[in-house]
Amino acid sequence: MPNTLDDFIQTIIDSEPTPVLPISGVKRCHILLPDTPKPIGGVAYGDQYYSYVMAYAEEAAAQRGAARLVSKGEKVLLTTNARQLILWVMEPNAQKADALPILPMREVKRCHVSVPDLPKPIAAVVHNDKYYSYLMAYADKAAAQRGAQRLLKKGDQVLLTTTPRRLILWVHEPEAQKA
Image (cartoon, rainbow, N blue to C red; front, top):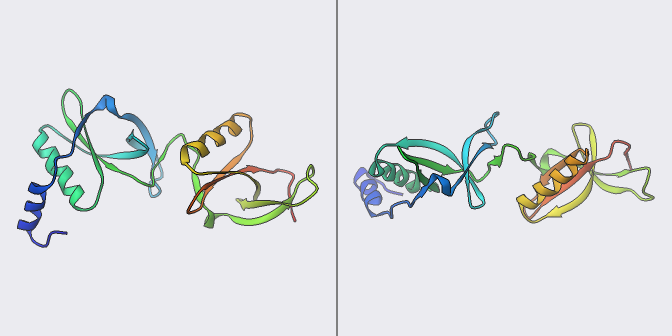
């Protein structure tokens, strides 16, 4: 991290310019951030979501803005359209707005429940006074969201939780009793 203004300016001069992508190279979307109650405009690029920072008329100014954020440890993206360059910052905790929210395991309580159609108690969690039984674990977010969407289309209520290594899909058990 630069200590003086001269060091900061030299860091910006020495840094590689951020590549500029055509706006058609990213997918526009709305994203949810953990600390924001409503979706905001963003873009998806690769497996990451980016939020809007600023629009620039000149590439040199856009590159300076990108370099400032990069020097602070941020990952950025620059896009261009016919009139301007747009600076975006990566949001590692963002979720696509139409995606099912993913809860940390600390927000649910683990338990076992009995359901009428199974002879033995099963692993479950309680969230908002509803029981959800374990259905499946996923290694990546996209697969977990697809699994959740399939069940939602069938009319099931589902819950997604995250652990350090995987995402877990839970399905609501309306007739469950705590075991």
